[in-house]
Amino acid sequence: MSATIDFSKIIEQDREERSQDDWNGTFLDYLELVKEKPETAMLAHQRVYNTLTKPGIRDVATVGNPKLRKIYKDDSVKIYNFFADEFFGLEPTINQIVRYFRSASMRGEESRQVLYLMGPVGSGKSSLVEKLKYALEVNTFYAIEGCPMHEEPLHLLPQHLRAKFSELLNVQIEGDLCPVCRWRLKNEYDNNYENFKIETKDFSRRSRVGIGMVPPVDPNNQDTSVLIGGEDISKLDMHSEGDPRVLDLSGAMNVGNRGMVEFIEVFKNEVEYLHVMITATQEKVIPAPGRHGMIYLDSAIIAHSNEAEWRKFRADHTNEAILDRIVVIPVPYNMELSEEVKIYKKIINNSDFEAHIAPYTLEFASMFAILTRLEKSNKVDPLTKLKIYNGDDVLEQGRTKKFDIQELKEESGREGMFGISTRFIMKALDNAITDSEGNGHCVNPINIAESLVNMIKSTEMAEDQRKEYLAYITDTLHKEYLQILEKEITRAFVYSYSEQAE
Image (cartoon, rainbow, N blue to C red; front, side):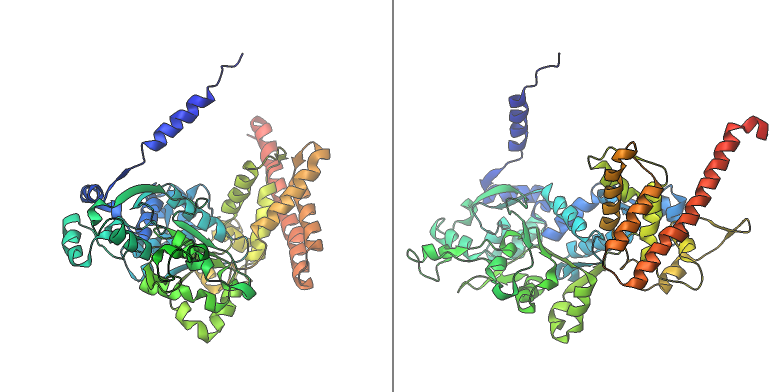
């Protein structure tokens, strides 16, 4: 008989543990906390950077993987443990993202720039942003109690005392109170800011605390209240239009203060709608609704879209003001075979599929995906190039032939920015696994080849591209698979008759 589970005890224990992290006090109490731990008052970019690096960093040169060293050679590529278990083959991109946050955390120019991820569909842009949001959600922060902007309590300090307190607390103090807290300080606390209530808050995208999201907005109805909030009409009967108490600061920028604001498919919006970015990045302020001036903003602004939208936006010279405030980080498709296989293993392991995946099935699908992402080269054929990018030795007449990986990559300008997506391959795998029910729930390379052929034939694409993709499956990879089978059968034969072979 199974032991009785006390669910109420588990719930109470969790509630008790979480309540221990809650803190309430006055501004004076908060000053003591900051004096003891100055990082308590860190800015948004610093908080994200600290979380990304806390689990540890490994240099490729020190990792016990000769393939990685061969692929990256003298490049100073690092592996960040925060991303290592979920993202494969994106080390250069992740390095650029962390470098952005490092520079921004030191209050460099990047702290006043938009981080923009640009790449083909299914390359991992949205997943990377989700991971960055998670980096915030494991944190708590201190905020002025009741502030709609969850703002930094040090904003309560008057300007003439800030230099002195910066020295005493060993922190940089920037920003100013929002209109609502300014009104409360005067009318509720009689300007005795030392008595203002301070509390801890958890970052949460669901509760809209410290994480704001801006989806593409209908061009015919681009209301800026989605970004900066508005005025509560129901309160205009009680207060004048210039009274801060009528403000409804619930826009994505307001919500994302102290943390992050994500612009999804950013260039699907009209340019005028994006002008809020200009002041939000360069001046670190956003306009308040109505007649309430500007509001300080401390947030990492992250945007993403596909390459076609980026090229269209960049081609318009009237967008120069926004372009000058963007740090572009390409997110190409993965080009390493071993890493591509890991992607599909992870997705399948997270699913409820129970089919047996035969050896080399995922390798077959992964090779096809990468072949479609390669640019043609006069130096090597596509399959050889794939192996070189994977750090494999290429044999010619029994000898290892030397190739310069970096030279091949430099020759290919847009490699990885086109081709078959991860989602396309997963659909083919899903179809093959589903069809395997009448085959003992076993999927092999032949099954996945048939599934890919059917999908390519039914997908809209240029006819020459369709022929090229089909040739990869029925010719290039078919021959490669036969060679693999020959080697495996020979190896099995020699192993089984090892004594006779000797």
